Length: 117
Image (cartoon, rainbow, N blue to C red; front, side, top):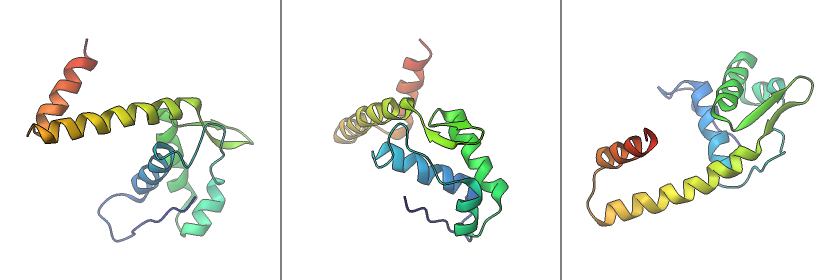
């Protein structure tokens, strides 16, 4: 897994890490049971604070992408595969909406409406 961050970006580093790992999971390059690098190891390789990596891992845990286990680190969950499958449906939805000239705001409103049922 290759993670790149842009220290000059206005996006916080922890969020860049979350997005990078999320993208790897959704693309299928990380699967259920795969371990993420140890927080200290990743922090050292990216030259960032270990707490920044831990913050990213906690956000990924809160989203259901990883499970944090003391002594075992961050492990990709089975829910990540389910999220990847749903992403494929989202891609289809976006493509269909674009073909019909439907705006992003309209799509989001439809999704929120369905989620609130």
